[in-house]
Image (cartoon, rainbow, N blue to C red; front, side, top):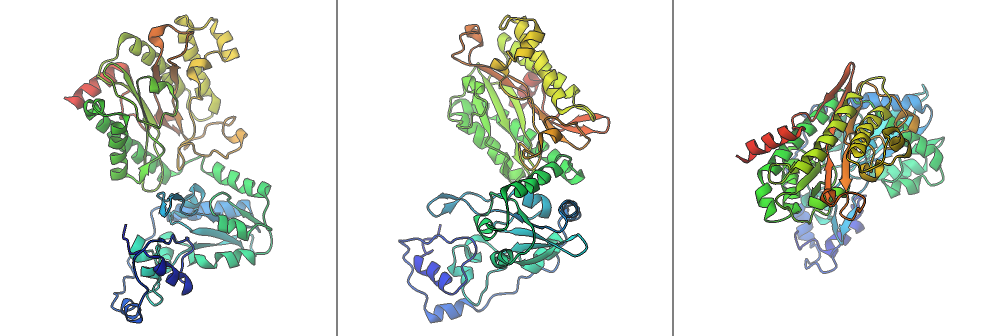
Length: 493
């Protein structure tokens, strides 16, 4: 990063009133001198007009408008505030890559930090939506080059008129938001946890209970995906499948390094075909596969062991896949590995078969758990009968987790939804969920034969509920043990 981002330059921006809503991080030891009058005047001149007049609305503009209309109908007469969020500091003066709040993205399609969507109630029980964004840098006062968040530092911003064309909504200067909110009258609700400035302006106008009702409604709106969202999830799954192929091709090289080689290989695909990975990739080799969320990815990759790869590409519109395959590192399952893998596959098949409209959300979980319990009894690892095992939950020593979750803008999507609409709810066409049973035998588990210890297997696919059943969006990746071996052999030549 350029050394000339000096404290003097940052101070100049603040003194001139051009500091942005995002806090600039001044460097104590910058070497740039103060700005001379001649330099300041020079920087004001000679810049071309780059305003774009050829912009078309984003593909989902009509859908985001419909979502705002549904939100408006649910909360008539109330002011609704949905912030994108702010940059988060990684260390000192560097930030984490920004990801806007899912509620904000769902309602606007915009992904800009510090943005705020406000729905103002109108007299007809509807709302006027305004998207508050930071405007273009002002060439007159020097913010564009003196501020660490100016355009010469972080890139050109979309102008407010350009944003109106893109998002199909009225757009205003985000720097006016604190005053707008402080002067607000009547009932107000906000989505909490993303913007401390917004929350400070609304401290005496909102309650946690009322705000939670807004968050819950927005979460439940996302339970059923529309055609745009389904297309995004299909793309995420296709890109993720290609990322898994990339990993198989480099497993020999990964054995010479570590799980991080696998993580980096998949990350490359995620950045080439999408925005990022949708969550921390789990690249768990050998006994690490028995740790459900092994994201350290610093272990060895050894011949003869299994690799549990749980990863997903997040699209540029922020929809993520969530797929898991358990692969023999040398391309061939041992007899015991195959036995355990085939049991998990059978459980997943039972779970997927239970996904259909009108079924209870719990049905696919219970179907998969029954198969796993049957295998554990068959292998003599737990005393039957199977009904007793299921009633007491004894299989959970080795199955550990639920069999799936909703998927979308969040990897664990719709998490704020009420229990009666999610875990105790009924499946509907357009819902997208994972089916991901697993068996995990810990290294220190003395209740199983020694040869089982250190083996972990999970198989996970992304399943779309349709009018007459379901579609496996991640079916491009093989699932049976024989197909996995043949696929790996083909990719590795």
